[in-house]
Length: 171
Image 1: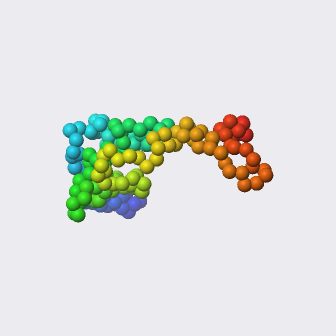
Image 2: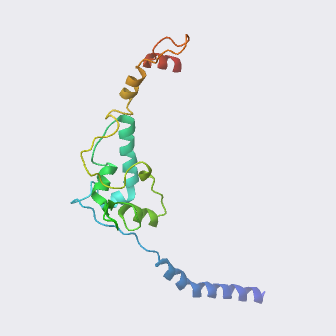
Image 3: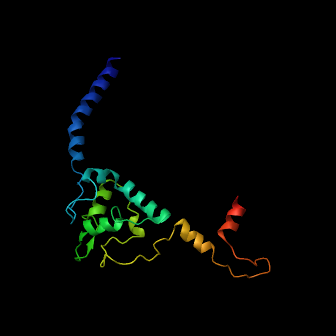
């Protein structure tokens, strides 16, 4: 019994002795490099954007893709145009270990999937036209595309497909 209490005492002493080592190693994690944007101020409070930028960007994406509403206030393109900084080659970007997006996302161990589709560099011409029509992805755009005649390839398909006929089948 006395041996068991001695082991407990030794284990507690060892933990207390190793505690400063654990605390000192926590400070060795490099902090992210957060460079100031080019604008006067962010579109929202800095603290709010640090905590909620993904929610803001997802909300903007959904409004754009599902409802066709395009605004500049919370657009990813606006973020990139403001926060991009030159890399070693002199090109402005938000990716790279010392650049705005990648720096924080690496620190937080979060993967950035925005740039699988979007450019990480600011637009050369900020007034560039979008590739898709402004109403692409909206219900009106989809309805217009369904009202286009489908060429008949067989005797079974001899009419045009319309939104009314599609909704009638679904109901």
